Amino acid sequence: METNNRVYITDIEIQTLWGDTSIEWHNLDPRINIIVGQNGFGKTTMLNLIKAVLSKDDKFCRMLKAKVKVRTTVGEMYFDGKQMVHKPAYGGFDGARCFHYVNTFDVPASKKSSLSQLGISLDSVLYQRSDSIYSFSDYRLSMLKDLSTAQFKQERINKFFDLIDMLFASTGKRIEIDDKNRVVFKKGRTTIQMDHLSAGEKQILLLLFTLFLMEDKSNVILLDEPEISLHVEWQDRLINLMLDINPNCQIIMTTHSPSIFADGWEDKLVFISDLISNP
Image (tube, rainbow, N blue to C red; front, side, top):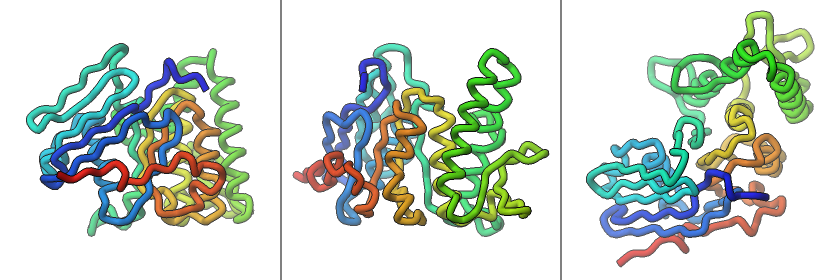
């Protein structure tokens, strides 16, 4: 696949993590990077530090007293211990559209809310809840603003919904848009709201809608243990599903599940212990 014009991370360097730990990761794969290793070695911490630098949030870096540098095909971004610096080589780096961190853990959002964080995240991706999040509702509205692309976008939606129906076929559920413009599932004559789905169902939908909204554009997506709550069959198919929806994204994920990489992705494994050095 041609990579010359794609946005992806090429190198990651982390210093002074926990005071004495360094992580160096060079020549990342433009498409698939699967980080594996024992608990406590810093897989999730590394993802969060990458997220912090790409989103220009220095709080996490300062908390861990870590210096972080992320090189991409459009420049480099780093936190040097004092300030966050973004140095785009060309075209800039729009973090809101070129980078996504998808948290798939289904934990309570707060003690006062009955909704989970996963449910809130899925709701945000589906509907216009924030100006900073490009939602499925925004995508559908864009069809009204630009009629020249409406047919193409509707065909994308139809194809995407067919894929979701195929994934949910064993449960008898079908996805559709109701008369109130809500994305729902139907099972026979019963309407199932998104928040009533299982954690695994919400999780796969959050991932797939996020990828769909990239519109085949070059993006970096970070995933921390995406197999959580997913059936083994969905774990087996996850990477291929993601690349089918957006073949131009770079996926960087952590996992403890062999099912994630069993379908021909073993050569994309990176052991976190091989990236770590201590003085």
